[in-house]
Image 1 (cartoon, rainbow, N blue to C red):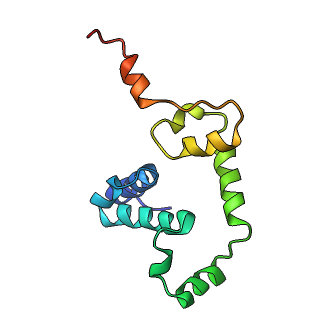
Image 2 (image 1 turned 120 degrees about the vertical axis):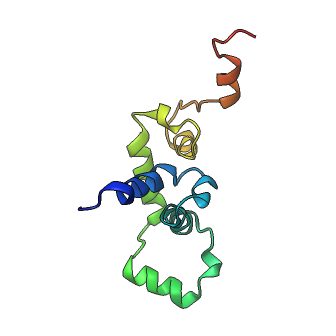
Length: 118
């Protein structure tokens, strides 16, 4: 779309980190803004910071029919076949709810089972 260099890198970083709370908030403004936007849109964090009129204007411009169920279904479909990519991020919660038999990676067990000798 004609975006290259540092601007493209910031977009990529913002998307890559938006499921990692707190880290993006200490980075470039575009990265922090994307994270805050996702938190508001998907999780409702900051919902009451917007007036009723502001929220109505957003929903009018971007309707949310069955948003909660549809986004969870989209997340599930997008990661069902690559569950290993959920290690260390919030998507493990999605698979734990919607994919029978999913076992999330455990950071403590990864450390304990490292091949490094004591």
